Image (cartoon, rainbow, N blue to C red; front, side, top):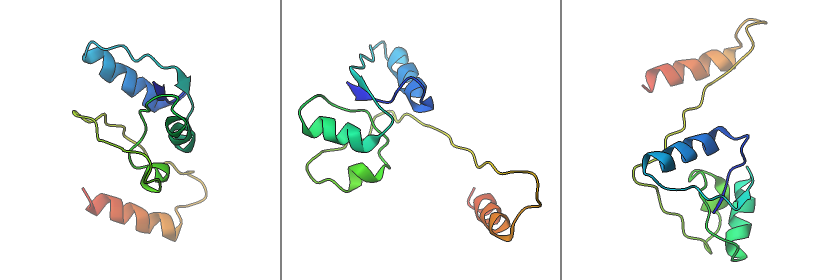
Length: 101
């Protein structure tokens, strides 16, 4: 199995999902670079658990990417400095995010 390194939050989510399913996440190779996941798969090293939204998967017709069922969710957060005051661009982004819910 090729997946994310121990320092990745996604690795923790994958490990938890495997534990819930009573499966062993037997990671042989670990990297946070999805392009490297793809390169290792193409070299015949193994199969990979990668973020489906990563550009490296969308741009390579030589690999097959299937979604996980049930999906493994990974929430992200928008973070910004409190000082100086919020920029016009950030205000616009926050408006979009708040109305998209």
